[in-house]
Length: 242
Figure 1 (tube, rainbow, N blue to C red):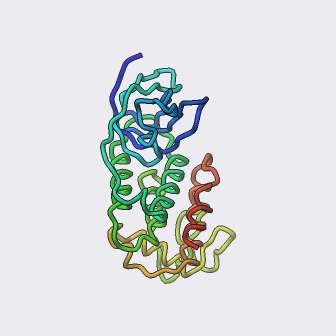
Figure 2: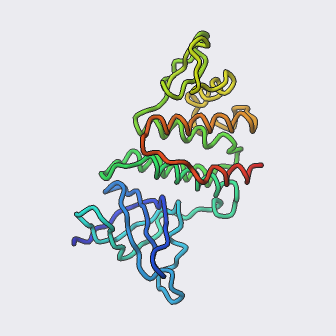
Figure 3: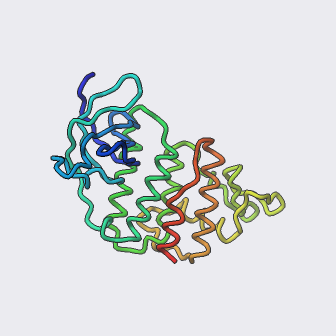
């Protein structure tokens, strides 16, 4: 098997056997790859297990497996060090939900430099932001959906002011159904569709509004992506924010 090098972000880490880890990594050069690192959980391991935390951006040297099974990692090197995410319980909880959503949504096993750069910039933004990040997850999910090809249609108007997660657009009050957000949350979602990510702290919201908006966007993802699973990290983030 050829030895290749790639930049990647860890989206999932699972303990395997007594001392190994299986990682789902979205790489710049090869798209989504499943990798295994052996012996890293041993006390005498030369490689620090902290390197393999979810959210970390690393340079991987690994044996490329053309049979679409596990690629064995030979070595890794840090490419970006977080300053605040692992020290801030709110930021780390948001980051965990980001990675779970991203892993659920991304399936492609080919290079997508634009998507990789998008993910990197959002994790850096989370790490470096000094403003309120209360609206962070809503804006992230909206922008990620655009990169994945199913973003909501920004057709909000005086007559179409209800967000319908099934149709992925704003509809009139007469058309409301089980997939619709409230008028206030629909307006909030539309405002964040238009907003620049650096300005999301300027948009007023409360906990109830953000909870409903997040629930509606999770439903939106589930309706657009058949294999999108339930999210475990949502409950953790809500507990942290409560």
